[in-house]
Image (cartoon, rainbow, N blue to C red; front, side, top):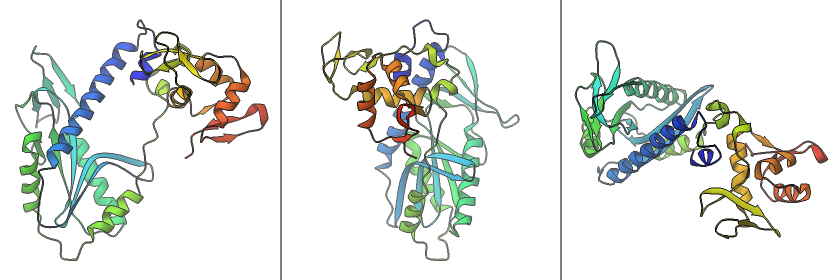
Amino acid sequence: MALLLARLDHQHPQRPFLERELHWKTAGKRGEERIRKKFNEFYQEEEFHTLWNVSLKIDNWFVQMDGLLLTEHCAIIIESKNISGQLHFDEKTGEFFRVNPTGEKTVMENPKIQLNKHIRFLTHFFKMKKINLSVAGLIVFTAKDCEFISKPHGVSICKTYQMIEYLLEILQAFPLEAENIKLSKIKKLILTNQTPYKQAPLCTYYFIDPKDLNPGVYCPNCKILTMQRAKRNWICTECGVRNASAHILAIQEYLTFVETNITNQKLREFCGFESRAVATRLLSQLDLKRIGKSKAYSYHFHE
């Protein structure tokens, strides 16, 4: 997201929204890191396994779970939410909203709905794989300055510092399953079936005209598009740093931001240089799938 912002003018109409998105994503990652760090305190004598950032699909039904705890009692889905302020769950309407310190009310998607969907998915996934293991869930709010004004019924919700106790309480509510469950095999099965989510190019996703992206190659030192091609190298015109592989990030940007394939001409336009021979050499050095013939080659990520 930061790299996308680096290619947009400061006056671009989508910039404020993307800056908020970047803030939320960065905060979310910090929250997930707090959960993983806190999870170091989890212990039980029985076997257990923990998976993070689990992505699975059944046909066109895709889910992404922040964490998954596998035990002989049950599997517990862990959902991380980094939302600050006063948190309200309205049981009558099913709405979830937060009120910030200034009194502003913001209605958001109810995390209870998301968790229940994930529980249904994993229950069905286990049934398909003939795994006799119950599924439960826990929503962990990771923001340090969040306050529960109300909580919904029928779902476990806590703050980061409460997570371990809540997990143990959930496990106590599930008796050991009758059959001998091989948790290591279940873990291997889940890892084998991991399916990374294929998101649409960000320009499509955020309704940005690719023509609005400024061309150039990103300097990791200056954090701007100031790298220029010179004598088989990339040199920053501002700080003078050299980076022979700076084009690799630019190609990844194009395939992530604009479209899922890149050509010789598109690379030159995106990076801001003219040599067709240089573009051909740079593209051929990368592990990309090449489609087409001769001058009409297009390059894609391997699936």
